[in-house]
Amino acid sequence: MLMIVPLNTLRPGEGGIVVNIVAGSYARQRLVSMGLTPGATVQIIESHSMGPIIISVGGVRFAIGSGLAAKVMVRKL
Image 1 (spheres, rainbow, N blue to C red):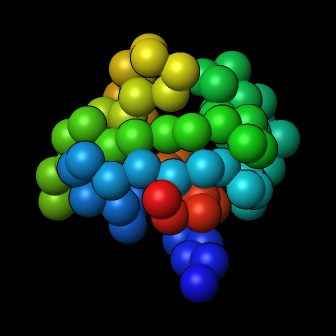
Image 2: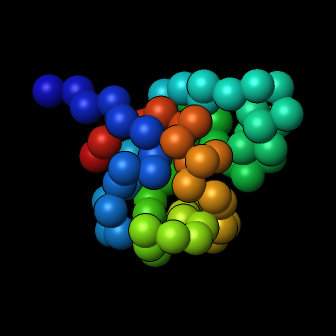
């Protein structure tokens, strides 16, 4: 069963494949510049109830806010 969920709902250690970015052009451009493009594999490194989410995309770690992460739709692995 395919589970498409926002990136910010994944827990540390979980990963997904980006399927869509539901955002305006500025936010989309920012996410794409981090490598979050459709088909990219992303893994959650750290996630807290408050503060940024640490993710890994293509072996590179980034910190993004939970609100921005909510705009990235992933197919859960």
